[in-house]
Length: 287
Image (cartoon, rainbow, N blue to C red; front, top):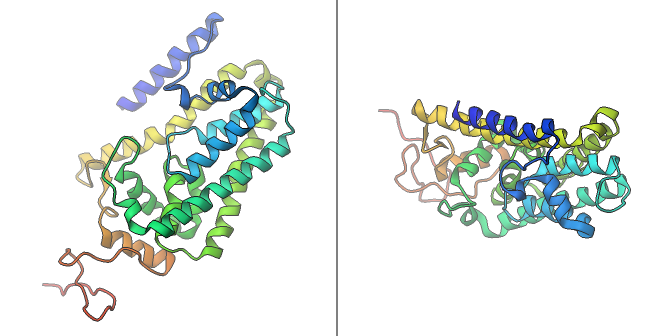
């Protein structure tokens, strides 16, 4: 309720300058405003946009405007308001490469560093609850999470890392990665380009950008609301999904989705017992 109220107030306040003919403010920090980012890149805008997509998907930095940046770039190209002239299909090809290679790098990071990459304590840019959400998506969608995650903030950053940590079959990962990069990197950009050709959109591009930023915030707001709701009912601990916040629970998802577990059960942990001969942990007998 609080998140919805704040977001509604922000969108309302942002629309007032438009009605008055004044400049439009950005929602949140400047690095979350796609229009500001594109403008600030200047003649290096193509490199800048490609770099943002690559960093968000490949370098474990989830706080970047992925969806809204792609859509805005496509819309501005359609209206000849992009800082440099570029063919939309050339831009799409470069964004596809950035999205694909970003996930490849994230997979390698997870594969090389293993569970250590997800064992860090919470910090400003890293939260264990994001990892829990990622495992929840793998538990629900299986390997298709690599595709689905592209459209979910935070999850798209950590899903390929989790795939590497769990040693997901590389051929399967690449196939999912290609489809995801096409649907997200190319699809969202072309959607912005095609909609940008409508006269109404051309005449109201500023209002559209405000709407894009608002919509891009909604999934995050929804996740926050769901976390608070679960926490209030005792289903989570400090906003984290208790089904995926223990090594053995994550290992169970890895065995189901990837066919192997990278996270060994912890000796003495509830629900499992360690087998000395290296076999699979067996459930404790019912009492």
